[in-house]
Length: 185
Image: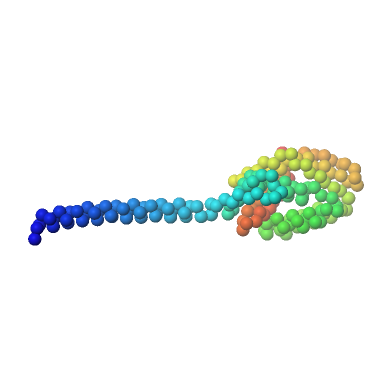
C-alpha cells in the first residue's frame, strides 16, 4: 500500500468536498434570498388597466389605487351626488349606493333619500363643476373643489365655490365610497 498516494488522494477528496460544500451553501443562500424576495412580492402586484372611456391609465394593488383612479372616481361620485335634478336624483342615488361601502350603506341611503325628498319638494336642481381634484393615494382620499350652482323652480338662487372630501376604500377588487362630505376650503 502506498501511503503517500493514499494521503494525497484523501487530501484531494477533502478539497473537492469543501468545494462542493461551498457550492451547496451558495445555492442554499440563493434559494433563501429568492424565497424572501418572492414573499415580499406577494400582494405587491400592480395591474395597469386602460378602460375604454378613461383618458389616463392607473394601477391597482390589493388595497390601494393610484391617484389617477381616485380622481376619476371622485369626479364620478361628485357628479352622482351634486349634479342632480328632481328627475335624476332617484336613479343617481341607486347608482351611488352601488359604490358605497357596506358599513356606510344605510347612512348614505337615508341621507340621499332625505335629500331627494327635499329637492322634489322645493323643485330644486344643483349643478357642480369640478375645478380641482387633489388626490392622496396614501389615505385614499380626494379633495374636490368646484362651483355649485343651485336653482329653485328654474331660477338660480346660489353659485358658491365649495370643497368636498371623498374617502375611498379599495378591497376585494372593488372601489367603495366610505364618506363624501363638505369641507372648508
